[in-house]
Amino acid sequence: MARCEFSQLSRDEPCCPLSRRGRLCLGLALLVLILSAAVLLVALTRSPTPTPEALAWNGTGSTRNLFAIVLGRCYTYTQLLRPGLGSEACPKILDAFKSAFISKNPCDIMKEDYQPLVDLVNQTVPCNKSLFWSKSKELAHQYSWVQGGMFTLEDTLLGYLADDLTWCGDPSSVEPNYQSCPRWNECLNHTGSVFWKVISQKFAESACGVVQVMLNGSLSKPFHKSSTFGSVELFSLDPRKVHTLQAWVMHDIRGNYSDSCSGPSIRELESIVNKRNITFTCQNNYRPARLVQCVKNIEHSSCASKI
Ligand code: JS2
Image (cartoon, rainbow, N blue to C red; front, top):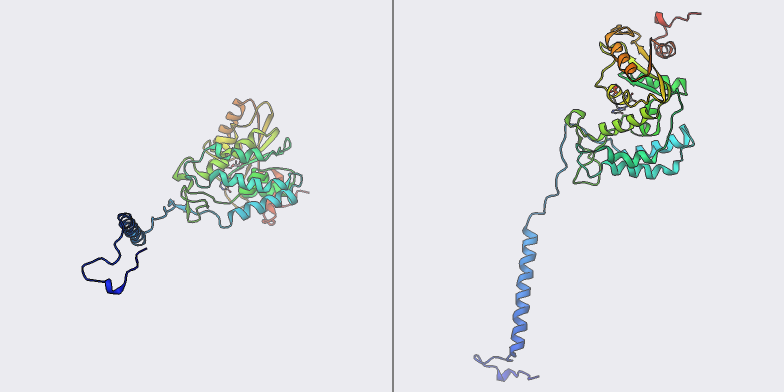
């Protein structure tokens, strides 16, 4: 390789003449360098692609620590409350719950989204032990707890897992939307309402023998055809398995008596039940449930012992 002596240096002669190939390589290297610098400059100066914002809704966001609560409730139910339903299924149940709504539009949930979760839980309620309710959740739950053998939907595993929780996802995230979820009246195929319709239907379809429904007689219309009981469960009862529906019209122990077994809304319920070839019976202030009300109203006249 020719060495360049200083003495040979002169203003107008190149020091070490590059071969044609050498000049080409140098040119390419310079081009690559310039392009790399340009790309780096664009990358550094261009604003980062904005991560898509979660959809904003009018309702409260998902319950904090949602998955920990659902998993904990699953273990509590399967290990303590009703042992026998294998707790080893709890992690799969949680996964199926997540998959039903995570990364999905909370107003575009289908029944099929919850089917894997429903299929994981095979729980049957004994005949004559199903307790439906409408606008009387607290008393229905107090009664089923005291009575011990009755099952409201929330005494079944799936109802127990989700009761009083809020949850929804978002297409842009793998996490629940903790900022906001749609209110039930914001859209039809709502994460929560689809869930409750799916498990309510299953609960009613599996009922057998004599079933009970607790209604609120302190309302002007204790029975509404548009309620979950009136629109989903009542029409999901199987007349081949359910022979009688007993209605208990309960009045607030301090409240007014708005409607009773002889009122128009209960007669409407009776007509629907009879048309479904199920026998209908009705009691105002069913005594055992009345006594549950008396626990907090012991001085009330209707709580005086009749002994
Ligand atoms: C939001 C909830 C919750 O028979 C009962 C249950 O078996 C269930 O199927 O729903 C029926 C009561 O619904 P209904 O007749 O519309 O009466 P409601 O007093 O207006 O109760 C509405 C709640 C329906 C579903 N749901 N929704 N968050 O935690 C929750 N729990 C239930 N059952």
